[in-house]
Length: 558
Image 1: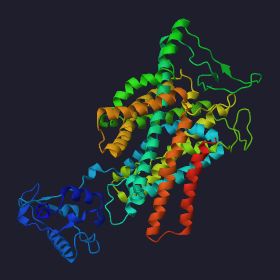
Image 2: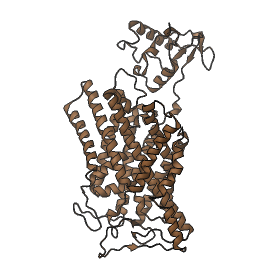
Image 3: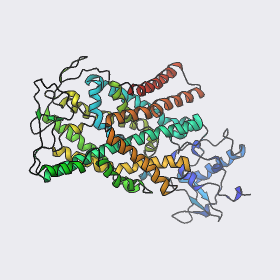
Image 4: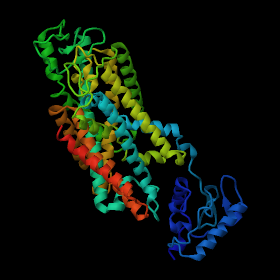
């Protein structure tokens, strides 16, 4: 009796299911019971709208199929061509009327070009600053080859993740994410493992953000202080002469050698006491990370992060400005390349170096989008083009990384500086007094201040949702979680502000599970259940798992 009082079709399920996929797989079986609506009872924008003859025929067919079997039996469920289109579906009301189901608004879906650049913008993060350093660690030639090879592997694994929900039969997976897929195949272990490794990537990114925000805030403040107090040069470092100065913050030089470098000393018009006081209160590792706590900890405690989502366009502007900055610097500095295949020289690194696993760790995080690719692709207007759009996006990301990495490495002035001077954050190779670099640091600082609360919101939603079943159980629960996250960032910014190492370790760790192990196992299990698994496929995907494990282990020996 209770079932008889319920609407024959649920408005929420029907609208969502039909808007997502036109297949019977996306419909709830209880929502496919037969229905019949008198033409005079149809109401919509135009009163007394009549049911079309085609809709009436389809309704009769659904009624026929429903008599052949129970609603829970899929064997004789209505095929796709029998299910009415979205424009012909009506919801029955106990009041004797029926309302037409409104299909999903096509304007809410994005064309392919928007989807491609959304993926590009999401993947373009802090890793782009470490790409030149990674190429230096691997060697110029080997670095380029590794970037291309890793990008292709990451694309394939991302393709597996994107296709994984659709390979699950007899279930509505239209609103599933990859952790749901892992739970289906591996139970609670898969669900919690994917959550933990997803947290590693998010918290690792937040730690890198904290280190970079400390760096950018320090250099921006130093630039303003030097300008206000007529400080001529702001860095006492080895560097080149000329208008486009490049510095080596940590030079490893032979004092007896004949290096064409200049040592630049601070010259100010003020007194030493003022400078010392400023340096004590404006320290990159001692004070700046603590100043950021005052600003960012309250922002992390906001219940909703929708306000900060409005500023995501700053990410695109920052990346475009970085590309322009790299291009201008490369044109002004020129190319400085010599090819020494296996032997190091005074100014150049070999083309093939044994430190290459450090670059693969960086690239694993640089190409990582696997934990949110299903969500991003749901907004694509033409779902049949998902694989093509994903491939194009990965190609654009790879070309961007290749462009920035190759130009910075090639334009780095060697001699007089050694290529080994390239820093994990290549902006550190430019002095604080460089106006263009100051603008880049300022853009990136404001972008990270707005993105950091978004990352914290994602961590909170996943952790609190899994533990307490509520995204915001209480202010004190949220505050405790945020203090732990912020504390990790402050400690790393103070004691180990090396973003290259932080990126490579977090990338290799989360990549082991979410890029290599889980997608490969999901693919092999799915193929085996369908009877399609062959030994070449099993061997290749097992090799991917071994690569992921080797990538992680390699970080500890380099």
